[in-house]
Image (cartoon, rainbow, N blue to C red; front, side):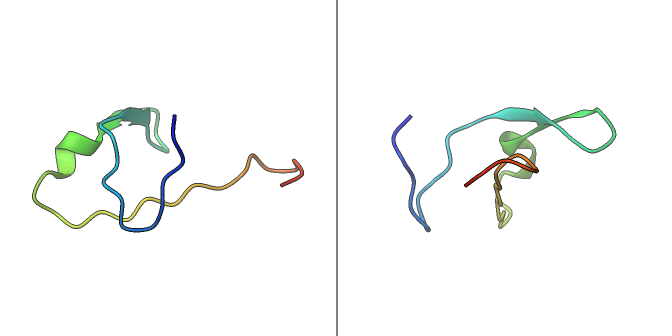
Length: 45
């Protein structure tokens, strides 16, 4: 996947939330969404 920059549109995706339920970017259509990604805990980077 090409790298993204601040302000780029995110590709559609589905992920698990903190309770194990599925959440999709499409669930938030028409709303402002902020995505934050971080490295896996206890890994260099």
